[in-house]
Length: 361
Image (cartoon, rainbow, N blue to C red; front, side, top):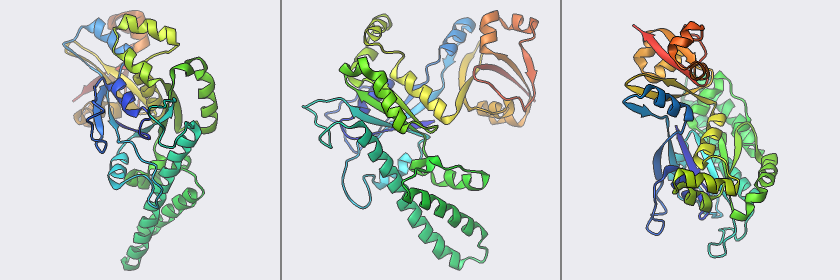
């Protein structure tokens, strides 16, 4: 899974990237046209506990690939603020994190001169819509020309109808994530990956003095922008970068002082999993304990395929016990005694926290 981090220059997006990746970036020497990238382990206390119990040779966390894009400039021109390089890369992201500056610092002025959370959030949404509209208009023009040359026009006409549906909504300033997609038009969404259809995480980068009224800020912004496909998270870049470099015990004390819960990484990942409809299952043993990321609603056979394609093709049964049952009973043997250890077929819907062992031919 890839998540892109974007925002205006000096919004704190690279500080957020450094905090969650623990990679130090020398901002004075960084090429502002470059994107920083890091594969980050997904923290999971359940996997940690399973590792303590089984004491395997290795522990393998699920991972997320974070990409910190260069800050976009608010340049007024017909093509919008996104260049071709950005659009090509951003469309491959599974979700977008938009870092919005909420702190005042006279030594580092905001690119638009003043702090305004709502304006900056809406600006980005407008730019997504503008970029998608430009693509749709270009695509419709090409389809119309191709239609004249084709003998079989069914597929082209279907795509034209879908592109016109997108165009109508975009011209009404409606992002494509607000539309519904069935099996017939979902393929176009997957093929073209429009930006305004991407799940969006809005990360409000607030000042230290905003800690005391952070819930009120979150409530106000959520009321205006939060949807099933948009979530809002808070972070305090300067504080949390410093906290991330402390020892665990000292870090916990300072977090309590600031009224902060969890890490920025944990908050981002939880929101991303919720937006993308993701969950985890585990495999355990003497060699390895491992967390696997799957879509909610996936079957045992589909989940087996995430481990290895042979497991999907040669699937027989899945041995299943929930994490909660295993921890409560303390061993697989006790889970079997109480009927909590089950054999499930390929249509079994895997639940978050299931521990699986795949039987295959």
